[in-house]
Amino acid sequence: MPDIVTLNYSEAGQGTPVVLLHGFPLSGAIWHEHQKRLSDRYRVITPDLRGHGRSPAPSGVYEMDLLARDVLAVLDALLIKKAIIMGHSMGGYVALAAWKLAPERFLALGLIASQAGADTEEGRQSRYKLVTKVAANGSKDVAETMLPKLFAPDLPAEAPIIELVRQLILNTQPTGIIGSLEGMAVRPDSGTLLPKISVPVLILAGAHDQIIAPDKAKAMAAAVKTATLTMVEHAGHMPMLEQPQATTTALCNFLGGVGT
Ligand code: MLT
Image 1 (cartoon, helix red, strand yellow):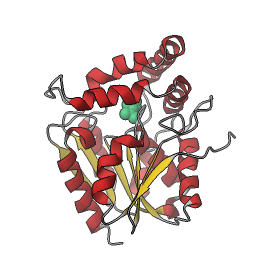
Image 2: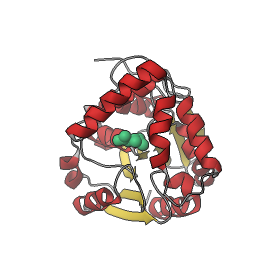
Image 3: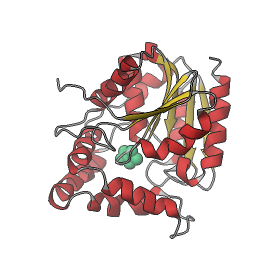
């Protein structure tokens, strides 16, 4: 089994620990504005997953369990026994893998623009095609493939968040992109975990997500007994950047109800 790596992370505030995981192929930076906003009441930790941001990017398949073990090691290093762990998209796959490995570490769970299902065969094959392109041309092919689908269609083409996300993707190392694509391709279906989750779960999606259909959020919410479902209007796959205020409000309302 590959070794865990020591992740880079940013930490702010005091109180109940809240861990915000980013999606593929971005970094903890997507959460920094929310980290600032929440840090007056919570201890907010935003790691860079393996292969992303300033964390190490070893070669190999980044299975979701492996990414989850890296994140649990950050909690260990910070002497945090239990936390509210929320993940965006691939970060949600990692949060579900962490729940499977160590449910006792969770005070609550958040799945932001994410899903519980595994890839379809077609989805898996398109990941492997992208792996070939990234191996040949580097990160820019991922930016070209993903950027047109990441935001709600009504976002103006000159919105600064588009450039921000482009730079985050371009700064992600090819080994990190390839490891993550291969890891997501082999991730198991986590659907059977959902009815067993006993802590509060926030399921938040952009109403116009073109990468993970919002109906998947509704289906997850129907399967989780303890779910709070929030659909963010005028947002696609990146609600924390497209609609930061609505996302903060949803996070604060949820966190306030967790009763820690
Ligand atoms: C992400 O945003 O993390 C990815 O697009 C998720 C995926 O490709 O399944």
